[in-house]
Length: 409
Image (cartoon, rainbow, N blue to C red):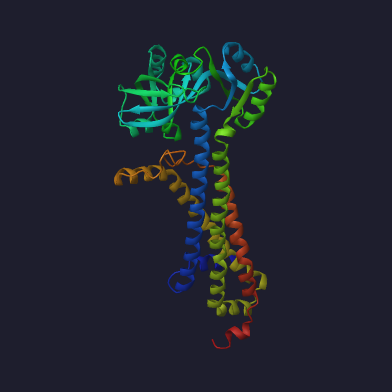
């Protein structure tokens, strides 16, 4: 029989006659469970924000854009050149305008995008949120728009109603603004910050509101690799004549992406410190066990148990605490990650509040994405720290002098 493992296991699961040892072991395990579970939950939420940024926000907003300072007149020829560039999947024309949308006495600043529906569907996931028939109707029907959900909620309007859109004179700031009434065909509900400011209409409708009705603002580009957006846009501009310039999501949403990455690292570091504290709580637990079990240690020594085996007993006990606490923490962390979104939604529905507002946060819900590499990294870190925490107490146990320990027994 493996004596160190047998005794270490008995100390970890000690119950009736060793209540102090059992209590200390459970406290150490509970600390690891909480630390590991919270770390996995936080990392899953950060991964979820990163995924939603790429799959929702950047799937609708331009990944890269090519503009001309005077507008693009022959966008079909430009699109052929852009589509042949390295790293480009497809491109689509757009008209981009800043304006106001007004209903009765309320007005909200918005970003108006005029799109060519057939080409837009090749570069974005708009069809995931708006029915294809509605998009076709927007193309065919004059003066029709699709509103962001939060805009409609703020103005207290719904599909089928009319809104007034005001676009200032872009060339002469003091010129007469263009005012038109539009019918709301549908609401764009992505549950992201996009719902708070975007208005979609056909390319022809938006062109009539612009200062240059015969031109488009530029081309939106879908890329093979999001993180090459700046390089691809720059290479395209170098091949075009003077007057063209580019933009990419790294300029418009790059700060958000870097903030998510930095938050993941910082919060992960803080949560790792909690795991480290919980792991090194094993030190105090094992030291208390050593003090409690000095008589047992002395008897084992007098029976011929070597110092290495004495050390092994407490290394086994601390390692078992680390393994059990880590495994339970992983299980609870995964469960929390799976239910946190529904739980938050249920709380918001029950109390009638919304914790994440689209005008403050990029998303109005709490996404999660469990990544197994994070779980492996967290588990390995917790177990290794727990093992390292056993070295000093086990060394102290091996230094117990049998004569001194048994003097008053």
